[in-house]
Length: 278
Image 1 (cartoon, rainbow, N blue to C red):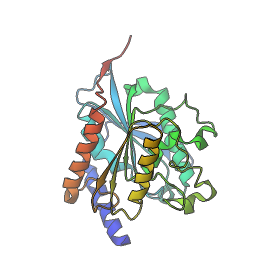
Image 2 (spheres, rainbow, N blue to C red):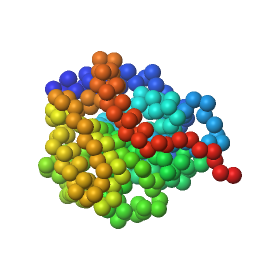
Image 3 (cartoon, helix red, strand yellow):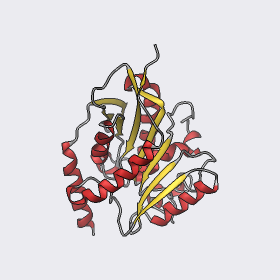
Image 4 (cartoon, helix red, strand yellow):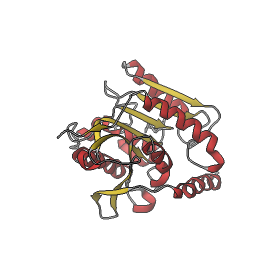
């Protein structure tokens, strides 16, 4: 199984090399690496405009550095009028760092975005967060009281109008994913156990045969959001496993199906580019 997973990871990693960002914005210097936002611009990008934006967080179990995972989707939405931003963060294999370090990097990226909206030419009221697996957890981690209690205040971090979560880690306890690495913090960092009363409208795509992050975890997460009066749509992909949505030539049908569902959800917000105020 490990060999099959490695082959799938290599295939989509190789296939993403056709996609390159238009700009890089360093947002954090660390002892292990300089972290930068990889930014994709719409055609005929105009510095006088403010664009809707999608912020992407890659997956990889806080272990694998898969920064290019969302480059194809980022380019797709950039071509349709969005500023697409792929967030880098530290991982175990590349940097020897912990899951909480990765999460802190993700939140620091959101602070940098919040402080540099003009530089990025994006509209704070037209932003979607997207993430896969632990990247899905990271995309929603701004909801966790754990981080607010450690200095990440609500006024510092840019907030999304919606969440797109692809086979996300929503439960980090023993009934979910990641409890062994998170240890005593596993419950504090579990989204389903610490959900606030307000959650942005959320779309979840999850394979029913996922053996890494259980489909049942996403069902529980959806039910918790709905019980609190929120909006959440869970789309099951029957018999599909973890990462079914990744861009691969051998997997283009599933990628296209997932992309269309994501696009329909994002289009429901009716975002549009606006002229910057003088």
